[in-house]
Image (cartoon, rainbow, N blue to C red; front, side, top):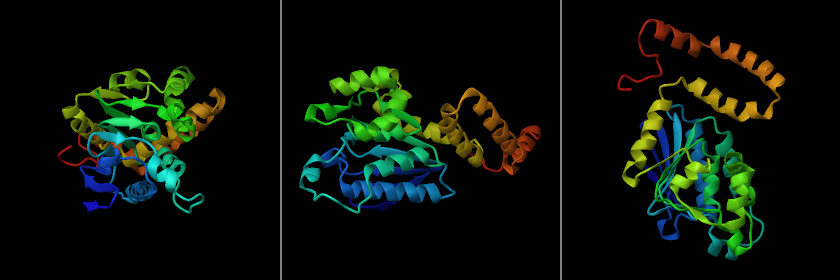
Length: 258
């Protein structure tokens, strides 16, 4: 495991675990943390041994959003990686991204939840689109979060800045499952193990499918997915998967212990 100032990076059980590591600042998004996070996501995305990417936080917070103290003192104009670049990279990353929301997730921190493909939260985690309380708006994070919240829930939560817990986050569509604090990481691991049962290329293509199909008309959707399906069914991976099924054995991508 390599430790940097603001993040931890570890490969464990099919997954790259990226931990935001500024617990004294509730893992607020400093420029340094954003750059490290971006670099880690790139590394994980390029590693063939990584089947999923997990984002979580050190201490009692997942991510409290922008580091307002450092933001106020930072000079205008910078060549640093911007947060929207990180969110876009997570959204389009070929590997499934899982948010393990262990605690406070405020403002910009909710962008990571919105950009993740699967989100599991501690039931007692506290969420808030708190930007309005400081005279700002959840601008960039709305691009990923509104796709999950919809305008109905989004309008309420953006306007009020109210706090809500893990169970409520499930109801709003922002999180898939809320569990007890001591069950969070085991639950995340179960998702990692389940994802690893699928063909690596099929998992990658499924993520593309979910992103692509809602942007198409019904007619274009059928036309495009017909070609897509044929290509995948004729792939070496699918041939192996169907052969393994017929022979009642595991395909090559599934480890003996899985």
